[in-house]
Amino acid sequence: MLRTETLSCRLGRSLILGDVSARFAAGRFTALVGANGSGKSTLLRCLMGIVAPETGQVLLDDRPVAGMRRRALARRMSYLPQANVCPDHMTVGELVELAGFGRTGLFGSVSGAERETFRHALQTVGLEGAERQRVSQLSGGQRQRAFIAMVLAQDTPLLLMDEPVNHLDLRYQYAVLDLVRSLVTDHGKTLIMVLHDLNLALAYADDVVLLKEGRVLAQGQAREVLDAPRVAEGFGIETRMREIEGRTVCLPRGARMVDLP
Amino acid sequence: MRYAKVSGAALLLLLVAALGNLGIGASPIPLPEVLRALFSFDLDSLDHYVVLSQRLPRALIAIYVGAVLAAGGAVMQGVTGNPLASPSTLGVSAGAMLGMLLSVFVLDAALPMQGFGALSGGFAGFALTLAVARLTGLGPDPRGLPLILSGALTGMLLAGLAGALLLTDPERRAEYLGWLAGNINHYYVDRLALFWPFGLVSFAVLMALARPLTLIGLGRERAETMGVATRPVMRLALSAVVLGASSATAICGPVGFVGLVVPHLVRPFTGAHLGRLLPVSAMAGAALLLLSDVLARRAFMPFTLHTGVLLELVGGICFGVLVYRLYLRVEARR
Ligand SMILES: Nc1ncnc2c1ncn2[C@@H]1O[C@H](COP(=O)(O)OP(=O)(O)OP(=O)(O)O)[C@@H](O)[C@H]1O
Ligand SMILES: [Mg+2]
Image: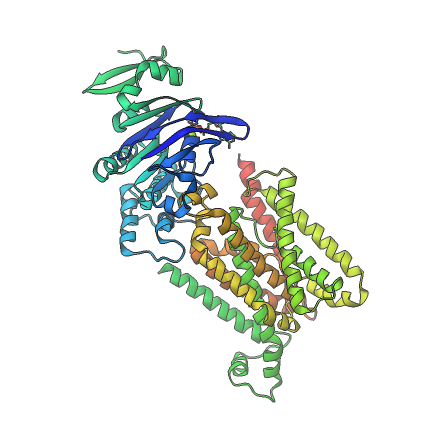
């Protein structure tokens, strides 16, 4: 299980995260939600140990992440950043293969099982047969899928993803979420995902951590955390929560919606 | 399979360039004669003597320098993500040049110590480039022109100092004037004999680090999360680049262009993975230097040009084209 203890973090001069104690239960899908600039990405980077907290710590199974070796960490946690860069001329196949570094290290060779993992990762995002294609020549959504495949190819028990379904068409939004959901349900993986769409969070996530201005406003089961008053407080918007087929959906309550016929 | 073809083609190109270099010189020597000189040397043949004592050393120097600089450029571009990074654009070559001259003109050092002079100079030049970039507040992003401008500034400064140093000793000046321009010449072969292990170590280190270095090309944070301790890897790799490039400068003076352009020429065929890019860049860089060496000697007959001067000329043009394509045109479009 991954958790933070009274974590605070400063970037430049300003305090970005203050006193964050969040728990991300093993074997569950936790959605990290909050307004733009509320510190979601920064929290993920702290969890990955690439941003050092000012106070507090990140604990992976009760061991501080700060003291762990990079490769050991890369075998346990993978991370999809919000923005991805890729050198010109790198191919999809190369990108995915690089994900094996944590396991093979400098001199290890790529095994057959490893290749199967890579192939499967590409298949999952619908990029099988695209190994030779340049990443820079893919569409925005295809590129995002290539990077998701890279994270899947890392094949770690814990996955941290920062807005992975951005740029994806609806089919692949659902496909990716279905996939990670099954990784959690069927394969016992732990998932932490930044999501902006509260409906997707309600549909796919077990738990929600709601951030506001660098602090945890609420955390717990998705349906309990995401009610209209909390959403109002966290995002400063009016919403309506409706039950459809036993599930909660969040609808806007703007005055400027299309008139009903 | 594709990579096998690409590296095979690069090897073939290298071979053709090498034989061409040996055969074409001030006076052409037919290919069979060149091969005979290499494999069954005849003491009485003047051609054989020329091939072995002059052209072969020159070719070996060209191969070494071309390979080391091209590999260095590929790594520097990969690690910084800056398409204009190379030993000559980031102050390494100029630093090594000044370090070498200092060891000769000030310390009167013997050849082995000159190598260390060049090496310390190379490190100092690179460090100075980074310091200039930091001091002038050019920002932490290594991808843009600011880093290259710092390199250019450093290069000019160090080259100016080197020029001034030459003036202090008119007698030795003539001897080093050619070297200063990048001169592939057979009488530098004793330097090659002394310094080649530097290049070998450099290349071996870079090849061993190819995977983590390629990952660093995806961004340092990204590489960290994929298991790369980026700080030691970058330090080691850049030190290896400086080691190789400084030894090249110690042998035949600063040679520009190769490190900058060869990786760009090769990447479309190999992809960006350094495990494939590095060996092919090295072979292509060697071939390029062999060919430009021939060109420098033949194109302006009866004059012969220093290879470094020719490359500087071509390199200046290519640099301009790259800057235009990678920065200016993009900005104009925005
Ligand atoms: N490198 C940095 N230096 C200084 N401040 C930063 C830096 N990176 C982010 N910030 C600030 O930290 C705050 C939180 O940023 P963060 O990227 O974590 O937000 P977020 O919740 O992921 O937002 P979004 O939904 O837009 O992705 C923002 O106010 C941002 O301006
Ligand atoms: Mg973010």
